[in-house]
Length: 177
Image 1 (cartoon, rainbow, N blue to C red):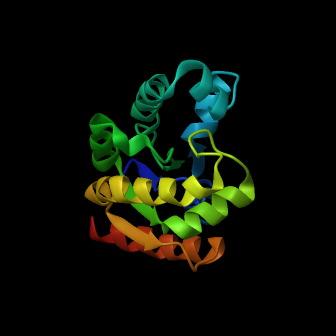
Image 2: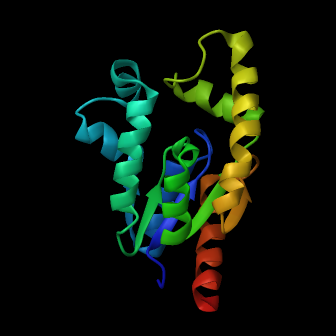
């Protein structure tokens, strides 16, 4: 691989971690998950880091970690959904390797998240949840798109299909760069 790595970006529920694990097997590359690494580093959960230290602290720790992780050669990195909120992180990702935006609609995102359990920033009130995902989509989509080299709509695709699509895309990308 010619670039530093493959960075999977997108909102929570887009499939970054699941697709990243599968892609790492197919490409025989190391898989890294920034949320898992950050949680392990703090000997805590992401939800606890948010509730104890606040989102600003979490985003700062995430920014520092991503700066280190994007230096790894030949790795696949699943990023946290909100990492793109920091301009410096967007620049680091865009310049560090192949950025793959896994798109998901607000409705599909909500269904996936609610099926897997609560996330720290998602409202508990069911009436507010769709509004939350829709607002996040409207605020963040432009940021994901601004750094993405490629985008894949994940709504109607399974993990294997997405991973195999990415294998082909990565091979084409590396052949042309």
